[in-house]
Image 1 (cartoon, rainbow, N blue to C red):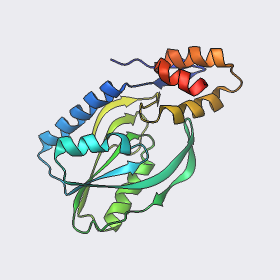
Image 2 (image 1 turned 90 degrees about the vertical axis):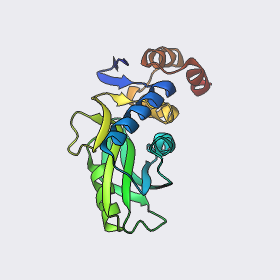
Image 3 (image 1 turned 120 degrees about the vertical axis):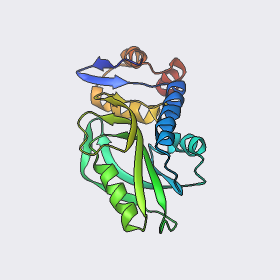
Amino acid sequence: MMKSVTIDSQAYICPSWQGMGEMTVSLSQKIQKSGQKFDRLIALAKGGWGWARQLQDLLRIETQSSIQISFYKGIMKTKRVPVVIQSLPISILGEKVLVYDDVVDSGETLELAKQYLLTHGAREVVSASHYIKSWTKTKPDYWVKETKAWILFPHDVVENMDLIVKKWGNVGKKELAVRFGRLGIEKTIIDFYLA
């Protein structure tokens, strides 16, 4: 079981590629048990891209698309409202879609996505995520784990390292290496980042 690490009063977790793959299988099993079938998987970009392909494969969903919604502007900081910045390039009229994101935080992005997809003709929208935050207002239909920690996913760890460095302020390279190591970031990534 992955433990969170707290640095400067902020909790972090850093799941591995293998751990995320195992969670994707768990998420797929939960969805399969429902007996639901989907016409399309829609990933919420950018976070949803990382595991949507494996989820699509495991659930044998034939088609996949994505939309991008912008909301985060830093660690535990969001814009006033989420905004669709990349629209759906195809018709989903009459389709039953599974909308996926890697984490549901406040739930506002998920709510916007569901309304957007219904407005664009989806017959039904079912939602899934690997993680939910304990304070979310809108829970997805399916999820694997709940956390309060900031998540450093393996597919966007460098982007998150940038955000963390801004949050930590004036910290030297040696201290950054130590802190990143405590978070569980792979040494090769730390070395790459600090080079």
